Amino acid sequence: MKKLTILVDMDDVLEDLLPAWVEYLNCKYGCRVRLSDITGWDMRQFFPQLRYDELYGALFDDALWSRVKPKRGAQEYVRRLIDDGHQVFVVTASHPKTIASKMEKVLFRYFPYLTWDNVIVTSKKQMIQGDVLVDDGPHNLAGGAYHKILMDAPHNQDVDVAAMGAVRAMSWRDVYRFICELSEKGVIYGSY
Ligand SMILES: [Mg+2]
Image 1 (tube, rainbow, N blue to C red):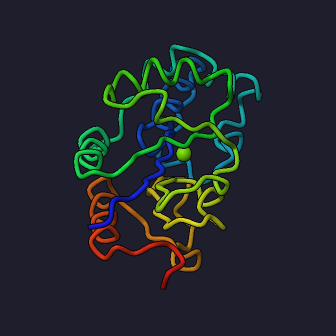
Image 2: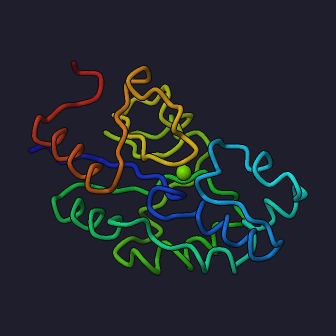
């Protein structure tokens, strides 16, 4: 069994930002958008009645991050990966002004076994070395020298995972299973 370096995205992978964001906007501005309505990356398309600063200003509000909950299974399976001997790094393209809230209200609150030493902030994830990246954003997986696991999300339904050499995980259970397979085969990215 090969010990792997596992890179894990934060928003909509470790936690459920999108449902919390939609709920926050619905409550604050009286919108009636459903999670299933969000079928793409550009949130403006789904909240046309909101100004840009109303929509994205939410991400700078502590009240939003207080609502964000871990994705089902994430706490348990990340813990299990660490217990299996792998290294886990959270790789996030977060805006610098949101970092403090995200860390305090979400990451260290729900994943107390992770510390700032496990966090990498970058908008160019392809620059980071690791054996596998778990991410809901195909733009973060494309071109990276790592095995690619796309976490299923309402906004990435149109992604052709096979075409980009990725696999789609429907849950953290799937993520864990894919990683166990890689680890058991001892497969290094690019070696086959
Ligand atoms: Mg994400």
